[in-house]
Length: 352
Image (cartoon, rainbow, N blue to C red; front, side):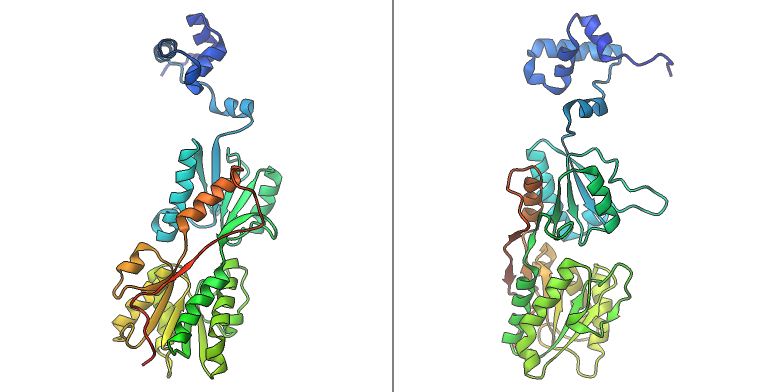
């Protein structure tokens, strides 16, 4: 490998007899030059081995990077493996692409590695977290960049895009009550980052730092109130994770009860699908013996056997609106809540 220093912009400009601004335009603003001049500059750059303007120097000079940062507390693979996360990512990526912006993924900091938040070259962040960790709130405050929450606010009163989780959960619970169900099991997300899975003694009143969990538990309580007033019972089980296997493990203690629930409310379709699979393994038929309602309406919900009743939420639009709000295309507000819809399919039936 050559030890000679790489050619710089001024070397290329001098060789061509043009200004450095002209060379810069050939790489970053081609519409400012004729096709012939731009081709001549790029051909000369290849011959000299000039790679183009320093992107970091350009960032400081322009005062912007042209990139949006997406913060998540999950491992990076979650964004591509989870169906709901993929749909949300698609909305984010679509608007970034339409606006000519790059997308920088900022995962949780792993042990022994620094957090990327302080050094990410972005113009602002979308925080796909519920909730954002206090340490990261401080890092973002130090950056002084715009931040929009996705599903939950970064801090109380800060702008975010989401849904009315409480109203959506109420609709799901009321659907079961309308069909005569009085014994209901709830499969919740984990109530805290390190909490143990299993039956939750405090039930629907369980304390949790997660905004969506808290709202959905409250919504289930609202919708199930008539059943409880009629002597019904609700048992809440916290899942360990968000995969189908976690839903299967969470429904097991419910099905083993002396008087098992006749219906299940799950906080995600993946948890619900796992519950349906475990019920089938035990010979419990859905919906004849057990009605199940999910949440999300990912593609697997309609393809399930039987097709699953669920709450549909606009994942793609949530991601898109968060980026638009970050870029200032829509007015920042405390909350932009998008509509949901209860989609009734064959996994729920009247109590027999």
